[in-house]
Length: 298
Image (tube, rainbow, N blue to C red; front, top):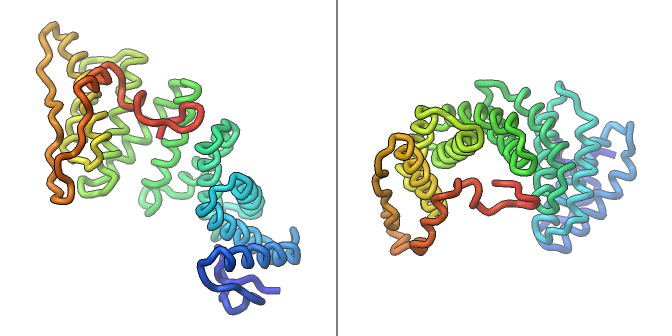
């Protein structure tokens, strides 16, 4: 029995004994049933066992994206864990397998808030970073994904060691994110958020505060289209400017909270928060951004 090309590992699709084509629910259900039969015929030790695992996981993931059934996600993780255990660092699919596995653990963490998923995902993210050293096309992505997991753990457990590591990872990621990159605003804002947290939790110098302000101003200069991101960044900037001038014993300058001017002709008269939103200036942007389960931050 030879497994075929819609499998993540991929041989020629015509080698599949039978495959329902199309994107209908009916075709997907038939293909899931077929994939289960193929997996039963390729048990552990069979040369096609790995391909059978990832093919069924891929099909179940398609159904999960449509229906968001937690039982599908549980089975996907079980299959991907088994596939991950079959690949070594020298395996051609090792990086893809561990990345997919960690991504699904992240999804379940956000869906259910189980810290065990996050704990399992972090060393996998570290392994992915080791497999994508500087110069690798996925290096920046691996940095950001590990930083995101550590941020989530910090949000839940408050370990300053995690926050310090996140800052180091975010600094490297920012250097790899040019101004024209679609994630440039996020790289600036998230590094500023982390430094802001560290400054107000551990205390810091004036130069630390000035770095945060500089990053926040650079982020606002990117003119992100999200009114929420604009508002959060302005609130954080106002608070940091207030802190700076308190340290200097002078009255802080006013921060412009007028609605941002957008260059896009498709966006006119954007809704901006009521002036009471200025109260958020007393809290960090990371403290008010919507969170996942158990207080995990995005």
